[in-house]
Length: 238
Image (cartoon, rainbow, N blue to C red; front, side, top):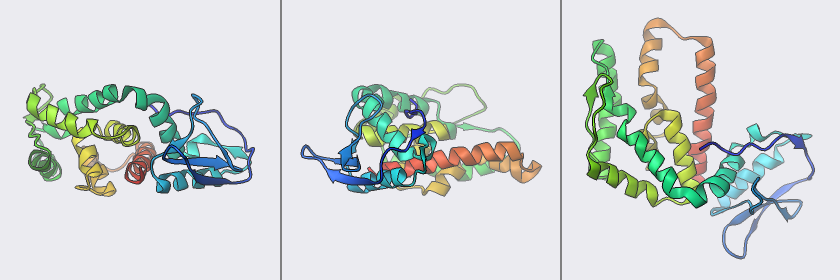
């Protein structure tokens, strides 16, 4: 699942505001007129705070509308056009990550990396077991380990309870981290944004501490972190 990305076009409005819809939710209005998603549906979200943040994205545009500079709007479009009618599939995809979750596959050596992974990931596994009723197994190396069906079912119940907006954001955070547990721990308030991102990149951080940083890789990681921050903000505003 990827956020919708409409083409750039010339700015055609003076200001963006927020209006409350009769049927519930809050719409982004351009010069008083409600706008629509790429699929032609009303662009409306469940929380005023999220709608205001989206309106701020529209107001920040210059002479041209640059979709890449409006991550909250793109995620709203995705939630409405792509997730709302297939939320079960999206929930299943998130749970698939848990079946081979990053935090369950550990290095056998060197000892420093083994320790770094344990320090970052063991608390997340303990939290999932205690708070979500979803204990998961760990293994050394890359050989697949089958996770308990009851644990995966418990995780799916948590994910499936989310509306399309939070589900869309959680899917983005999961795909960016490679871990459903890290994304859920962040969504549930167990990890802040920086801690979640650091946990997801424990291996990379250890490598950099020993061998130095590659500039291009660092720039790519910075761009991905910006995506994660936007998805996190969207989730917590929705």
